[in-house]
Image (cartoon, rainbow over all chains, first blue to last red):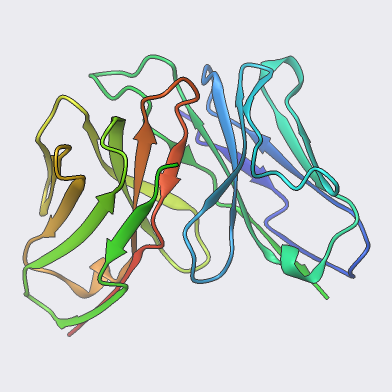
Length: 118
Length: 113
């Protein structure tokens, strides 16, 4: 079974530029999450989708961040314009509504996209 | 709002020691609790998932327990090895309508030969 795919793995941009990250969840997973992880901290939820609807985006800085999940599969997270404090790893995770062997709601993560804003 | 705390923040031990990592959460109404491992520059790898109705889960040298009433989970690592060096994170999944997983800051573990 293929895991969560993310791209690009690394991105370096100047402040005020824009950047987009892509995520392809595990096939059949209805729920998709974008997390921001700043060095030395735990992941912070930015947005949660169920199918193609937004469940929670209360911590998404909507003046500069946007995310969409078309057709309830792939998702894109965009930052425009980027600030220095956006330097972080952006992690995508997915989970199934019904798990196998009782493992309901188990999160599976991609490798992450590391953003450096200069 | 759920808050998750992990203690200790960092741990350095010699090979062979048995270890206990702690995770506490403020809202006991959780759906499940998941432990992860994160290697430098990598994503999170799931280690153990404990459903709210369960008390513990085991995988090899790892054992995780859950006490919802006290808001605590413990990850026990037996006979630690240098390959166990990584950051260990726990996530408590709220059982409310939005089912939001909240993470702690992690415990950074170094096991030296």
